[in-house]
Length: 272
Figure 1: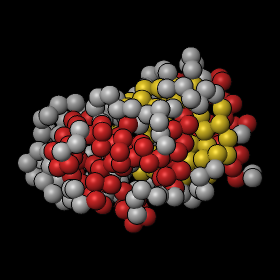
Figure 2: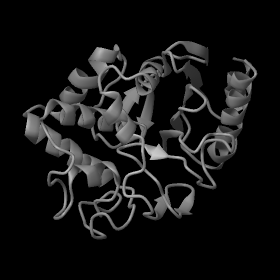
Figure 3: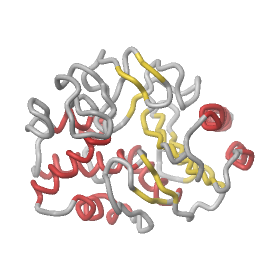
Figure 4: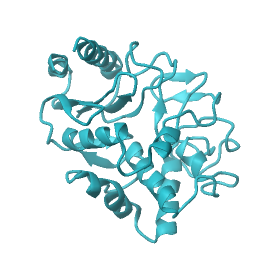
């Protein structure tokens, strides 16, 4: 795909990208797709997927207590537990505000580890990484932000997000549908959003503006971006997903470059 060559002009040392069709085939790839990048918060969708598998396995339930008083697994996944960004401190009643929280995903990882008697990183490996053949992906720390992976591995995950084999379609659909609709909050890097829509571990585009995807991205687009210069989106109406990893921290360069890349990818795919 010619559109992916745009990453050559990004003000970064190293970048790689790929587009994955709904049938799992690679529409295009560019850059060192085997290079391992820190994922930052693109770790969260991987952790969420492991949590959803734990739900289907019966190890945990979405509405069982987890995290701060009154919160559940569902609240932790949807960033509505009330926990602060990076502290184990409650800032709001569960379900009332969309407070983006690394601490919430740390609490989620601890909860799953206790429920399964398996360290969360190992549970993630067994439940998600190994079955999908993501052999270059590791979680050396927090399930909120410490994953390391490659474009090749995340392309496998992007294929799974479009045609799930490890989860039921019903569970994936629930995870990528708005949970606690109407809740407002700040989308990191993009300001206050009314509403700030999320599913279970996945941000949902809906009508957010400004946003890190494109103006042509469908409202059903879901995914995540990371402060390390990484993103993964899936557009069900387009029938494709895009992964882009870079080695420069998120900032004004990404706010400008990411939507332009997404628009170019969408245009090229629509042209056939």
